[in-house]
Image 1: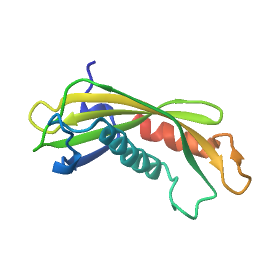
Image 2 (image 1 turned 60 degrees about the vertical axis):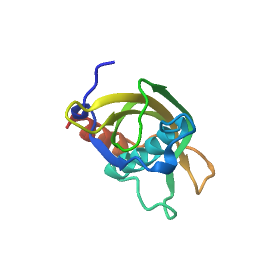
Image 3 (image 1 turned 90 degrees about the horizontal axis):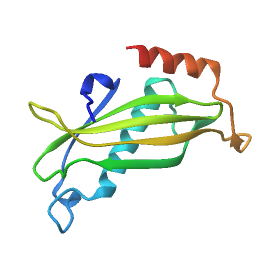
Image 4 (image 1 turned 180 degrees about the vertical axis):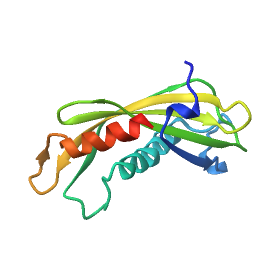
Length: 142
């Protein structure tokens, strides 16, 4: 799968911690999902969905998947890219790629998450507002 850092408007850098390694000597698979989560929060902050804990609406994770292309071993730094994919009526797809930082920025994993926009006051899913769609389109066009 051919991807590069320029394909993603949000980039998060992480050092690989020794404690993220598993018994086989590479980063445990669940860490990638945690990296996706941090990138997802930054992605939503970029389009104005902020004020965690005080927001009237926000994204709720409905599905996440990750395809692993190569192992990551300590010591290393990774860069996680995040972008919006398809936007539905009440849900949206976030796409991710994990690169090992270095000259080549080697792609080691990619995945996606489906999030549902949720109205916390009404306690139900909600339609993606036009203003949010416009912010997403503006971010995606950069």
